[in-house]
Picture 1 (cartoon, helix red, strand yellow):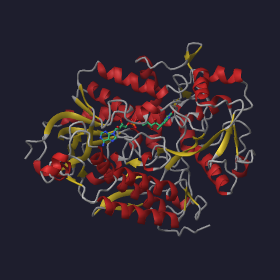
Picture 2 (cartoon, helix red, strand yellow):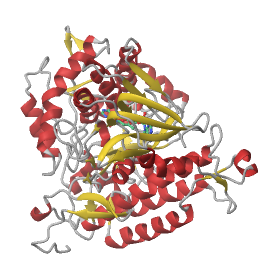
Picture 3 (tube, rainbow, N blue to C red):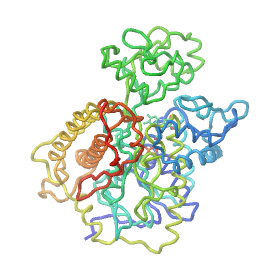
Length: 578
Ligand SMILES: Cc1cc2nc3c(=O)[nH]c(=O)nc-3n(C[C@H](O)[C@H](O)[C@H](O)COP(=O)(O)OP(=O)(O)OC[C@H]3O[C@@H](n4cnc5c(N)ncnc54)[C@H](O)[C@@H]3O)c2cc1C
């Protein structure tokens, strides 16, 4: 029975409209495909891309001689031995071309003497990071792609459409099932090729730089469809997320551009520089890679030397008011509105969940293990290994998006009409149509907050076996509390005794579907972290403090009987605790 279901047929379905999804959509139409671009939020405004403020890494070599091989060397070094070098090479090789194409589309990269300007960022061996202006790079990228799409008649857009599951037929992905959040209506989409571009998972953690749409849907969709994920234990914590004083209307990771331009001193609660204790002397400059800076701040706080709110101080007191204004003009006024005068007081900063290195297994054509399914952007695992370089994420979204769109169009061109078999959509549609009022009066918002606390406290930057086991037990308890069927606050469902799905903007129901994915993905992150008995990049185990050569291996996760099954851990040699 599909009478109550909105059904759509397209050549290429793109799920997610960040930089990766929008570039994929544009490129797929160049390959002759008709595209449906679906997003659970407003098109082009729902994920990380529109929030990104700083820089985009690409070896343009316009100001300083550069070559993509240098960029690759830095990417691989930052990845601590775990980069998928095919994907990393694709990112670095194709990056300049995408940056120039965005330039031609009018993104407005900042220029010096007629050349696209590039700035230095930690981990890069030379100035390589382009930008639009401070705090505005991601919005400009997003707007440029939205405008490029607006002129494109072959792209149909569907906002507020939350995809709940992929549909597979005989091991191939043939489309997806979702629901329209604005009306509650079930939707089934038949597609000859599907591109997953759903972004990352940092909403799983209490302190995060994420939007509400970044709970890791794409990873859960991939697992349930039968494909694998790699490197799920590697969550990047941005070391200097804003902590205090209260800052309204500004991004928590805004201190990065300040540090690029002005250096800035990281100080502990006793006003001492401390990074040299952890192997790097910053000396007022900005040279410490993200994983090491995160480690240094967390350790300093644990040693009782943190700032009052549990982080470190970041001081620009060495800068004059004129230097600050010259570098950041209107931002200084916005800080003043928040009562912050950087010439007089330092701010407090602390690590914040920011990016995910792991994700969907994909090849150089962005094809996943399932025919018909491609992946692009942050949802893809492997390119950045165990730690990502500044600026690589937007490049990855552009490059992988373009490649995925091309591959998806090629596949769509090769196969005939793609319909959906009723049998293959049944389970997902049953779930989307289900919904009884919650007799237990569960508070889904509180459940999400509890999950975020578990992940931050037990699966955060510094991990131990005991913490990870506790996290897994707590996640299991929350999963049992959530149950197998969505509940709703809608009176219509109540009147009919349930079974009619939700109504318009039923946010409790949206929380249920979010928790379904978040709990699965949280479990996968914690299980992979528990198995990796070493410390490497963003994964730091206090009970296994060293990096071990036998662990230079990817862990691969897939579902077996509904439970995560992880392979790839070294079996030949026993890892030893230190
Ligand atoms: C605050 C912030 C600042 C950053 N700054 C930088 C920077 O300066 N430089 C840099 O290189 N990187 C930066 N990053 C990282 C970078 O922005 C991201 O990695 C990149 O933009 C990801 O692009 P994407 O297209 O893969 O995903 P996103 O832009 O996150 O888009 C994913 C989209 O998928 C949609 N979606 C998710 N689930 C579903 C579903 N079930 N159904 C339908 N739609 C769905 C979401 O609504 C969203 O619109 C920053 C990230 C953040 C959060």
